[in-house]
Length: 626
Image (cartoon, rainbow, N blue to C red; front, side):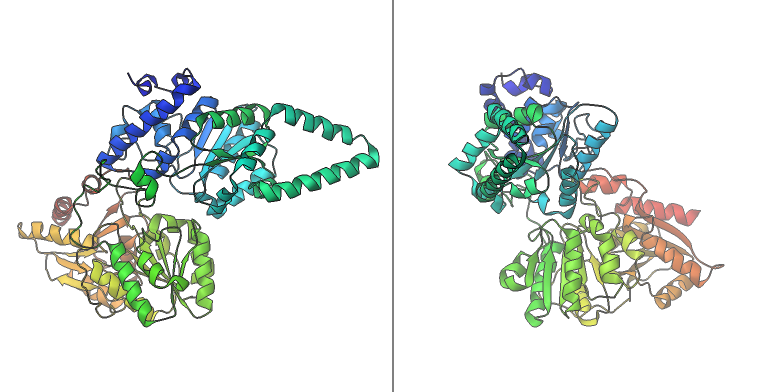
C-alpha cells in the first residue's frame, strides 16, 4: 500500500515520520505525472513545489492556518493532500476540480487565485482581519520568483514590512539571480539565525547594551553596522530586511527536513513579518520538465516515456504564430518597431522577434501595467511599440491604457492574445471582457480578425495608418487561414460582407464569424438565408455601412466571443438607436452571459453557452418567428 493512499487530509500527513515524507513526495509526483499526461495542466511549477507543500502542511494547522498560493500553478500537491486526490483525474475538466485554488472548492483554499503577484496583499488582508477579530492562526503566502516582478507584490511587501502583524512570505525561487548566493556559508548562516540559543543570547546582549549609556549605544551602533555589512555581502535577503521583513534562507526546497525545521522555528519563535527564501527546481523529478521548464509549464496530453505531445498537430498555425511571423516581417521593413511582452515571449509568439531583433525586444516580466506605460514612453520618442499581452492580463493595466496612452492618443499597438474563451484554465483566464472595457475608452481603435490573414492585414494597417492606440484582439488556437505572403492593409473601419441574404443580418465579430458561417449553412437548409457580416471593428463603428445594413434588415443578430454587457452587440444597438430611435431594427445579441464562465474543454463550453453553430441557428430561428 502506498503512503499517499492513507492521506485524506494534512492531519493524516502529520502522523508520518520525517523519513516517510520523501516517499510521499515521490508518490504525489507519480499521481501528477499520470493525470497531467492524460489531460494536460500546469506541470513544471507543481512538480517543483511538492516538498515545499508537504513541509507547509506538516508544520501548519491548515485549514485553520491559512495558505495563500500566488497564481496557483504550483498548487497540485496542495490539492492532492487536502482531500481531492480521488478527484484529481478531473482536474481542469468540465465539472471537475479547478486547476487553481478556488474558495468555493475547498476550505483549504484560502483565496481564489489565477493571476500573479496577489498572494502577499491577500495574505496581509487575512492577517490583519485575524488581528482585528482577536484570532491567532498563522498566515503564509507562497509566491514564486517570477510573480515577485509584479508591482503588486512589492506594494504588499512594503505594506507588510510597515506593520507588526505575524505573517510569513515564502519566496519559492527557481530562477532569479538572488539564488546565486547559495553555498556553505549561507547554509551555515541559516543554521545560526534559526538556532534558538543564538537568538536568545542575541536578544539578551542587545537588551544589556541598551542599559550601558553612551558606551552601550556605541557598541550597538558598531555591531549593527557590522551586521548590516555582512548581510549585504553574504545574505541575499537584505532587500527584504530593508523592507521590514525578517529574512530566513536560502533553504533547499527539496529537503523536507530542512524546511520543516525552518517553518517550525518561524511559526513558534519568529513573530512579525517574515520571509523564508526557498530554492527549488521547476519540473523536479521528471527529466524532460527539468531540462525545459518553459515547455512543460502548461502542457496538453503527452507521453510519459518520451515527453512528446499526444495531441495531433494543428493543421494551421495559431493566431499567436501568425502574429509572431507578421511582426517580424514588418520589423524587417521598419526599424522603429519595438516589441514588448510581460513574461510571455513564447505564449504571445514573440520569440522569433526576440531572436532576430534582441535590441528591440523587451520582456518586462510579470508587470503588465509597467509594460503599457513603458510603451507610452517609447511612443513619445517616435517609436512604434507593439505590446503583446493576453486579454485577461491586460485587464490589470486598464488605468495605464487610459491615463498613459489613450489620453494623449499615443501610437501604441496592443495585440490582445487569448481573447474569448480559453478552455481549461477557467474564469481567471478567459478573455471575456476586453471589448467591454476597451470600448469605453476615447481615442482608441479596436479590431478583431476572423482569421490569420486578417490579423496580418490589421497589424499592417496599424503600422501604416495609426493615429492613436490600436487594439487587435484574437483568440487562442489555430487560425483558419494564414497565407505565406502578407496581404494589403485592411480598409479602416469597413466591415466585410461575407455573404448576401434577405432573411436577416448576422453581424459576427472576429473568430465568431467562422462559427456564424457554419450556422448560416444550417439555416439555409430551413430556407432562411441571412446576410453575414464580418464586423472587423469593435470601435469605431461605421455609421455609413451600418446605416445601409439597418435599411436592408429589420432583424439583426450579433455574435461575439465577449461578455454581452458593454460588448460589441451593445455598441451596435447604441449606434442603431442614435441613428434612428423610432425605426431601429430588432436585435438578438449572442455572446457570454453576465457570469464567470467555468473551466472545461472548448467544445463543451461553447455548447453550454449556446454559441456553437447548431445553437446559433436554433436561436436565430426562434428570433425570426417571434
